[in-house]
Length: 138
Ligand SMILES: CC(C)(COP(=O)(O)OP(=O)(O)OC[C@H]1O[C@@H](n2cnc3c(N)ncnc32)[C@H](O)[C@@H]1OP(=O)(O)O)[C@@H](O)C(=O)NCCC(=O)NCCS
Image (cartoon, rainbow, N blue to C red; front, side):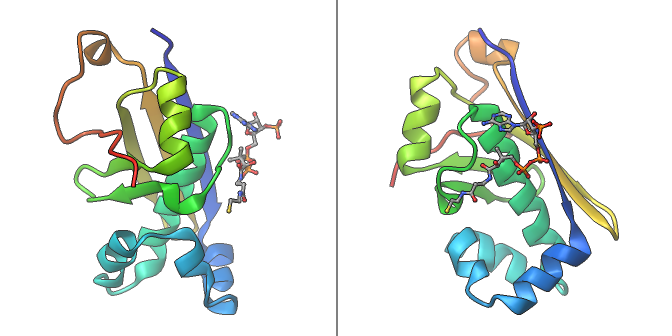
């Protein structure tokens, strides 16, 4: 059982500027479910920024980097749940990675995410709860 971790930080003002400057960035990086979830917030930017950080954190955990932004989907928020799709799902499977747990955080200036896999619960067959879910390929 290999314990894996990935961490990423995003500067919120830079991220918000990038979203404003490049309108297509939202659709390139985020899934419909993510956009719906964050679009319901008064300010969607922090919600999107922590999800952006989570995608990079999962890319580091996998060791592949981000193969495709939309193949790493972060839905829900208490707790956030990661679902992998397509090639990214296959990359995780090939490495024996089942569940991935996420923790997200932001302040006014920064957004960050930590992704972890390979805990003891996974060794005993998975916890089957809401804290993490590899998801199914699309
Ligand atoms: C791996 C990746 C997530 C790193 O993110 P980043 O924001 O550029 O870099 P950070 O400053 O957060 O982290 C850098 C550290 O990550 C670690 N890192 C780099 N590549 C890694 C990998 N494949 N696996 C695990 N950790 C990695 C290294 O320790 C690195 O430290 P170093 O620069 O001192 O060597 C990034 O390269 C990546 O995959 N980005 C997305 C690629 C992309 O745009 N794809 C397009 C899809 S449409």
